[in-house]
Length: 264
Image (tube, rainbow, N blue to C red; front, top):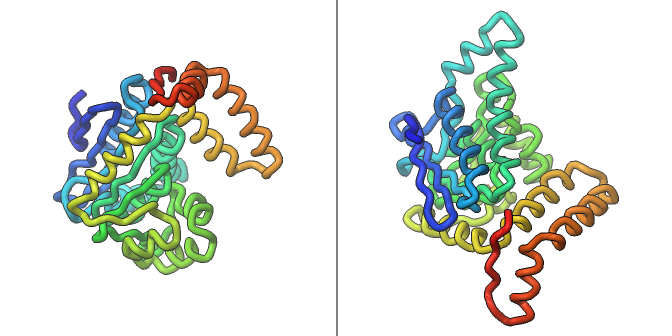
């Protein structure tokens, strides 16, 4: 389908979704968020898609945050429900990314601020251009991150690093984001999409069933006590080995050939 604020391309099992509002630093308007959710759900249900890449158009911004005018209107609204709607819309989008059931890679080409940083946190892997900047500047506007930043960020980079970002509102560069564990690697801007596509193709070569179960094990298991998480891991393993992919993978290993995974 055609989108107003997105570019969507699919090739070789990889869907690349580009937020295409470079003149506005790819800020997330309600329309952008609705389209992004639709594109992600379409990728989830398309058996030809095994991996998703999220990026921003242009060289300045990945996503420079949410729509401040919408935030102002929501915060000024008399009804608490109106204010909660702003927060819950973003939370729903982040949950769609995190729980897609297929790997989602953030290719961060510039500013990833506020909601943009929270998208990176919701993605399963993240590559950053050397020019990328990250931050949670909501404190400077008089409110807290509300699309998962106060919850996912401490879990990913540790409490002290997260507190520094959330309480100061200051930005960090790509190398610092890598040092604290917010992104997996840093590459020159000119190489960003090529490296993201290389990683996506690698993941697309894996078993779709195993990918889905690994994502499930980490996403849900990290919310459990260790003993409970280990039991959950064993349950998912039993599901995995019963799949056609596990049969193909082990047989291919014994026959010293590349496996051909098909099941979903």
